[in-house]
Image (cartoon, rainbow, N blue to C red; front, side):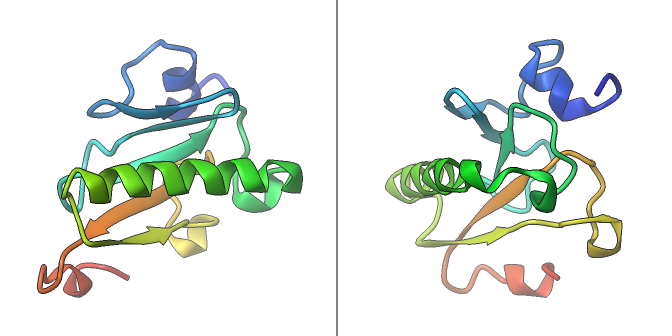
Length: 118
C-alpha cells in the first residue's frame, strides 16, 4: 500500500523507527518511535496485512519466532524482566496504523506502566 508508513519502512523509503532489532524473510522488527518504555519494539510483516485476521495462518509460527527472538534479546539486554505483547486489531481496538504490528513492551517490577496501558 502506497500510503502505509510500515510498507515504506519495509521498502527502505524511511528508516525503521529508532533502529532495527529483527529482520528475516517475512518480518521486520524495530524500536517504536513513541515508546512506552525503553526497548519498546514492533514486529511487522513485510507484506501488507491490515490485521492479524488478514495474515495467513501459515506465517503464525514465524511471527511467534520473531516475537520470541526480540523478547529474549530485550531481556538479555536488561531492558526488562518480562514483557507485554499486544496487538491492536482494528480501529475499535485502538489500531492507528492499518498494517499488522505486534508491540513488545519490556517490563520491570514496579515500573508503574500498568497505569498507562489499556
